[in-house]
Amino acid sequence: MADGADAIAAVVREILPVIPAGCSWAATAPDSSPTRGPVSLGGRLVGMALFTVPQARAELARIRPALDRLVAVRADAAELAAALSPGGPPTALGGMPELKAAEALLDELITAVRDTGAHLKGLAPLLVDFPAELDGDEVLLCWLEGDAELAWYHRVDLGFAGRRPLPS
Image 1 (cartoon, rainbow, N blue to C red):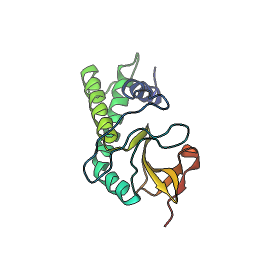
Image 2: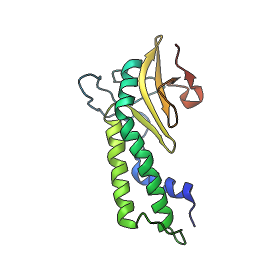
Image 3: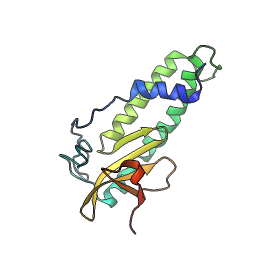
């Protein structure tokens, strides 16, 4: 029997494509935000405009309802996937049609977040990065599910392990 972690991992593998290092795509954002693309190639931000801290905070506030909905649908999808596994516990949420609907909605929500130029780096927990520059260094402004606001960053080459509070 798959536990909840296995169930969500299966859903994540199905809906989040593996994006190879150095791939590129363009996302068009509203006029108030720059157009952005992939995050890094060799530890450098390539071919994209950057968010300012105020722009990233405003964009996070704008997409926060989609992120909150993503969390709720993620939980439903995990529960449905667990229930549909052999010997899985029953759920009042439904069956395979509801799981497929949840997966489709997750895909739509993920696409909506990515279309802003933000990078959805993790689904459980949610991890959203906004490409930026601080003091001449290319960084990713970093929001993790549970954070009250956008208050962290890390250098592109260090990843999450290099996460630090934004300077005041």
